[in-house]
Length: 113
Length: 114
Image 1 (spheres, one colour):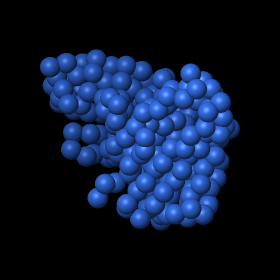
Image 2 (cartoon, helix red, strand yellow; image 1 turned 90 degrees about the vertical axis):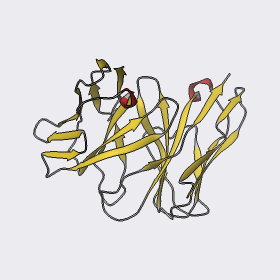
Image 3 (cartoon, chains in turn blue, red; image 1 turned 90 degrees about the horizontal axis):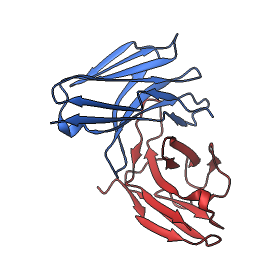
């Protein structure tokens, strides 16, 4: 399987704390994206980081990318109960404009009020 | 805009039955994808399409067929359903162009094969 790995598989924190989840992948990539999935729903795009970028911010989200280690991390600061969801990384390693994505196995985040 | 819609939302099949899942998008996207999601496995790509009239195999295509006769629709067919195809199926679409465009996902179809 070409799937990426995410860790931890599950994470439970108190509201207001920071949540960090990690993604590792296997091949060279064009970009890496993070998605959120609320229970029983489809995935929603959060943030994209290009292969030549090392860090990116969007609101309370901070993403880092280390291409030498083939890994990325997603930090959610000052977490809220509404952040409870599963988070997936997806890598685009495709060539010739096929834009196929490899998804990680996901991290289930639970934020306790 | 409705975005990406999927029909039906739930379905129960008996082994050997056939069915078609419909995905529709109203964003004029060129690319469309079918994924399946199983517990602990993340999303795995079944088939995808880079434009009307074209389809290609993804990571787990066996047991499925697809068609993209109209740009806005992407159909996923199961000719003879098996219990191993019990899963949640997601459709997604994205714009053509560069690699930095995001995918938009439908709400999913929960399929159980008995």
